[in-house]
Image (cartoon, rainbow, N blue to C red):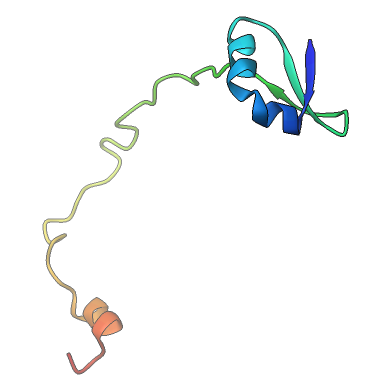
Length: 78
């Protein structure tokens, strides 16, 4: 395990990332007090598309303007 202070981590970030990628544990500290671990990114998995399929219907008039909404945006004399 390698412990480095923030200033050293900023200077040597590329080297530290390479160490972590090769399997070494790196801890970033402030005033020698460990704050965070530098770890390899692990994807959370694929997002599932279509979660709302069949749960609602799109109204036929979705693209039509609404007088009430227009008056909220442009005022009642528009």
